Length: 320
Ligand SMILES: *Cc1c(COP(=O)(O)O)cnc(C)c1O
Image (tube, rainbow, N blue to C red; front, top):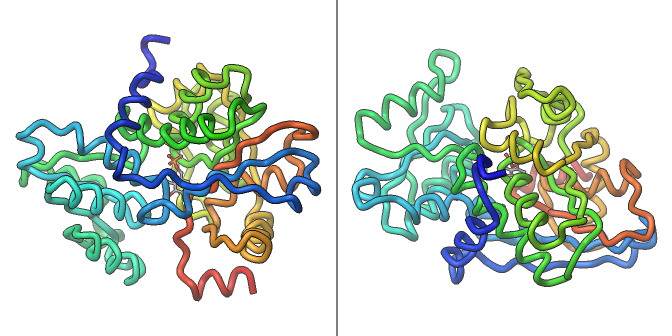
């Protein structure tokens, strides 16, 4: 246990750092969803978090622990999605420079959003260069510190704070279910669950097109896949991380999969019944519950809605 990347104490400290910075997001309930599933569901609404996803928690917790030299050098990352925006905002809040490396063909709206949070966007040609190499070169040249989207203890501990909030608010649960990409979110949540609700089953859900986490836990080693084709764009990571995988294995996380069609149905439910905009990836956990992928009859179930960043035209075409 001691060799794991994070402990519950790290989550507690992260939560103190995030006080007054990250929103304590609401926990919502739905009689319709409870009746349909036979469970009591608690939706933790990180779609209503600052930057529209839980990623601010991990990003801020990581940059807040920089040494003075690291603060002076700035932070760099590689992301066209929620992590890039989270790093940009967290860095600005902490008075640190940020560089976000993105493919030059990333949606203009994402480039603009990242710049809007104060990040310097550096675009690269993804057909000619490797994003990771671009980051490594710039980090070296500019003396910046690289913070990856999931495979970092400070990021993992930060993400776990949302589960700590959930247990503090609703008490112990039978099941906690959350999306899984690279496993930063799930490993942080599992760490909080182990401490605050030891009998709670921890379940991750990934797109069926990219079930690398499921295969990794079944085989006992990290399985790498090609970038999966799915509308769950924040869960297109190609493998779990060397820090996240051991936590998920040790804490006994179980992994389920759902289809894109099931994600769309869940998006429609949240928009029409709960007045919530949840991005496709944010619906992974809920879609598993709604489609009977695990037995929740009579159980108290926490469901993480991880983000709400989907542009309106895409949202309309998906749910229309
Ligand atoms: C990053 C992200 C995920 C996946 O998180 P991991 O830590 O990579 O497992 C899920 N949902 C949303 C909205 C995200 O931004």
